[in-house]
Amino acid sequence: MTTLHITVGDREQLRGDALQFVRDVEADGLDDQEGTATLQFGTYDDLIDSLTPLRLELVRAIAENGPESMREAARLVDRDVSDVHSDLKQLEVLGILTLEEGGPGGAIRPLVPFDRIEVHVDYPLVDGDDADDARASA
Image 1 (cartoon, rainbow, N blue to C red):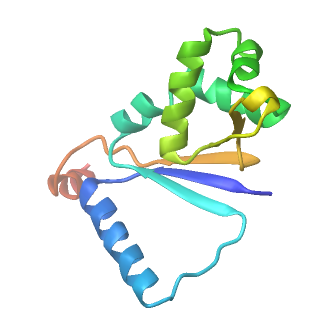
Image 2: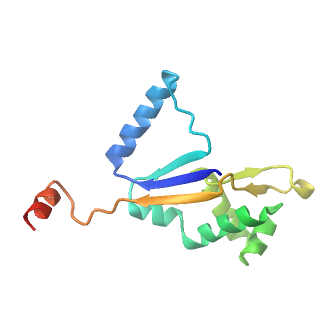
Image 3: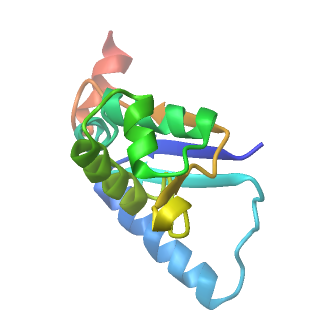
């Protein structure tokens, strides 16, 4: 089973994780976690803007049905082909799916390389360092 882990973290953490990834690649020290991938968003709003309910429905339909073209994917979710095309391009940029040439008649075929998506959202209700003090005094 292949799983896409989606997390939401602060921008500084994202920056630090990216720098660590680069250092690991340069040192050839990456752990090969077969069957998993991670997509991290800087804020909850970024997550919601990128993974709308319509896009998630599209991802599920593609994973379950394996359409041979973008047009067939649009039919699966009963949506306009141009809207689905736009969503597929955005999902490809995020790494949630791939678009492969070579479908019937030269069609571009969407493929979801994951069996499951797991989402972890850390959503602080209070900003800043005062959050720990407020919890301690409550």
